[in-house]
Length: 319
Length: 319
Image (cartoon, rainbow over all chains, first blue to last red):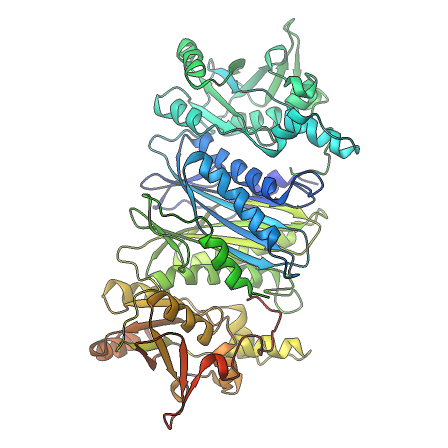
């Protein structure tokens, strides 16, 4: 059985032949049209991506909007607008729809953009939210630009959202900080714009599925190997520093990027400027796939290391 | 209880304050960004908009794509690209997802655009498809441009799709022509482009909900009254010429537009050029709302005429 992310990639590739109107087609965080218009869509299903005993409808909307905007951050794009489609219960109570809309709007307010359209249907099933983000990228950064000798960097800390899901999935209340990491993904738009606009990042992705699977995407699109130095990975204190959650917990919506080694001082200065921790966690090498390296230099193939997304606390989760 | 379309409109208006990046915001067939990029999204839910005992998954995808593209036609926009988000059963059988994707792709092929992105989630509920259309409108036509003395025009014939739904809803097989009207909405992109690009249409909408409710939208957005001359309405022969289905059946995805009376000969010539019937069915007047006028000149307020969408064969349908 393939994962949903693999299904997205298979479907995206179906019949894609390029188009004069399109600068960057399926397979990246967002597509880019001639003129720089950048567009992406992100679906969230009740019971799969969120539950209403975990978050309120407004939080679910905020989270869906922030997750969708994260794809623009990963392209280095400036957001212009949001659209929201939703399927909601047809019971005549429109409070869920209003709360979802309000939450998505708050995610737009945070980055200065409005909701310009959308659609609503009643549904006999779970609430479904599809958030469309539109932005403009002048010099966009794709997943495919990683080259041997680049350093691998990540923003923020990882595993907090996974810790919240992990707690909920065994009937516990998560640590409040972990809950916030799940309900309110960070805004990395200013960081993505600076990394792209200043020519720092050469490849970039947002961490939605987890460090290892998302590193695998950079590796595959770039035709290179990613080495993650596990002792450098900023495991979130609110996740108890759990390395498994940091590597595969997912839902962090931080940025991972690669850059030339000479960029190190500029990257650290940018982190200070934006008050965002930027941590070097590895490097790009010739080869394929993702390898993990511990502090003694011992290496393991990430696929063999016991860290994979079927082993996470959310085995049938949103991947 | 408000209709879903009313809910869309309420949600769209929530907190909308305008934006420098946006030429046309919520409330029309599509939003238009500065630079002419035109974008719309259209959600379709299994059991609400379609059923798999009515149409195949590929037909459902084609229909969803064609319905979404119809919004670009109504703006007079040139399509550039599609994106597709879907929620599908998580049973490991990906044939539904593939068939839906293939159907949407075929709708794009018909107008020369590709699918450039999207998302997939498993779902424990019905199949949900959200199709995002992106286009470019040079001189777009909104719903708000109708003025007294304009003539009211419609393309094609109406009620066929409603006849198919009507048959299915009582357990009958629809007339094959009516079934096609439901499963394969027409491509009115060339017509919309010509009506906008040649300065013919002054207001325009695509007929998704039905002639009366959609005329009500033109009236409301334009601050004018729409008079529909019922004897002129082109009721589809495959619907047995049923006027109710033509007025409120919905799902026809034909274009309705208003134009200055002096445009009549150019409109008829355009219809010949594109081989699309274009029929004058009424006029715009000072006032508000929608009135129906029969061949003897007797008038009824459309809201009082017994033709409303709660009286259609699909009372809890996609409105």
